[in-house]
Length: 143
Image (spheres, rainbow, N blue to C red):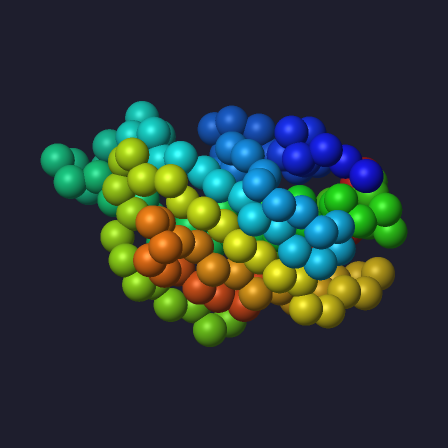
């Protein structure tokens, strides 16, 4: 089993497009609790919005998908595959996320097959929901 400290390394993502800093809990193939600290120096914040930086909702969705990717890739059945963000349903944005916030990412995988699967994600800051969605993962073999 992979250690929590090594779990982020399962992702193929790297800065500046890595939105998971740490994994706090992991049940391979089932669920993950991860987090990302919004530092404020992310390049896109300069334009979203000048003088009032807000962490974009679409990046919150990406962070949830990356966390879900860790839950998927930690399952030995999916080791060496490439989970792709295949779709999203039932998205709701509930609260603004700002620099300095610790975004907690909880994802529970619902159903997986060799070709894809669904998960449900909730992002929070200080226990308040910021974003929730149902996420579809397409599973590809890397080339």
